[in-house]
Image (tube, rainbow, N blue to C red; front, side, top):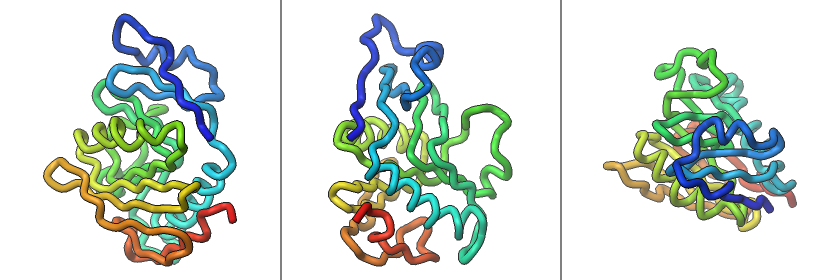
Length: 191
C-alpha cells in the first residue's frame, strides 16, 4: 500500500523547488498546485509494474513480436503546464516524439498513460491526474488495480474519458492502443 501525503499545506501553490526538497525515496507530484508525495510502491504494485513493462515495451518499444513505433517509459516525470505528474508508465508514438528530450523531464503530453492503482493513490489517480491528462489531450489511459486484479481501458473523446473496456482476473485481452498484441492478465498479478 502506498500512502500519499499532501506535503505540507502552503499558503501558495507548490513549486518545482518544493518538489526537489523532498527525499529521493518518494514519488513527488504537483497537481492543481498541491504537492503530493508517496513512498515507493508496495510489492503487488511493483510486480504489476515490471510485468506491464515487459508485456508492452517488448513489442511496442523494442518492436520484438509487435509493431514497435513507441517510446514506453516507466515513471517518467512529465511537466504539463503547472502540473508535474509521474504516471507508472507513459508512451509516446515516435511519430510525435522522434527522440526523448535531453532534459530530466518531458514537456510533451504522452499518447498513453498507465496508472497502477494503490488504495492510497486511487483518488488522485482516478480524478485529478486523469483531469490533467484529459486537459493535455492524452488519448489513452489504463487504470490497473493489482489488488482487485482489474484493467480499465479509457479513451479520450471530446475532452472526456470513456471506458472502452474493463477486464479482470486471468482474461486474455487486446487493449487499445496496443491491440496488436494479446495480454494475459494473470501475468500481471502476484498470484
